[in-house]
Length: 290
Image (tube, rainbow, N blue to C red; front, side, top):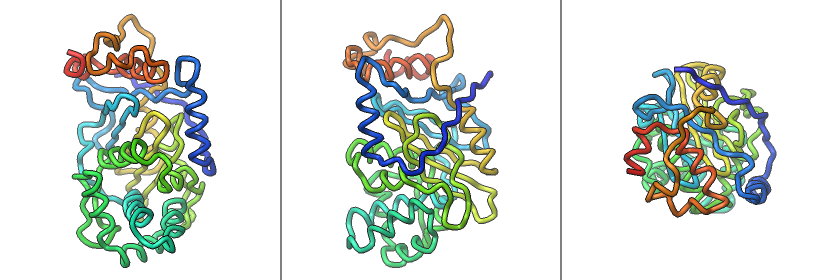
């Protein structure tokens, strides 16, 4: 199958989330979203096409539709991706004195802060997993040896966007530094997809495993791979296209899809919902639209 690559987007490490979301909302006026969500490239089974070493999950926020690789529920090394989960707990439930550290832990991927917060709040990750229904996330002890999945990462991001769009966790992801505290560049993976506002990255000590999760105004995406940062970027960019490839066939119309027909006349949600339907094969859309 021919795979189309999406144009890489320069990392905007200091873009405030409130401004970014406001710009996204304003540019939606006029009948379409100016920066539409990427469209996942799927195989005949409806799964995102990627090598088996790589795991990818995607959600389209306006419609709630999701797509992923066949292995998206595989619970893999959590590396620093999991730092969003203790940060969620700390920023929501504990002493404000720790809030600055929780934010810095996300922005700079600081292991020392993660160690301290985990020692003080060992229940933080399991509590967040239970609250958000992250069934693939397991931390038997030390935070750095736990596991999670890209499906869980996207579930967390989509829930935060819908219920707490002003979250300091999302703000920290949107203002992550270009370089982590250990000197490792934070410029790879899902962060390179056009339209991304914020990202958390993670990598193993030996650099043999990489992961990232990102959100934009109308989508969330996560990926991991047994390979280099460059490999993750290559596989991620090869799994999406920015627009539906030209061709004689389109997906079912919103008007003919009962669960989504209410969006047909919506100038904000209608166009991206139709774009996503056009990018998915019948094996995915038939069960949804009948």
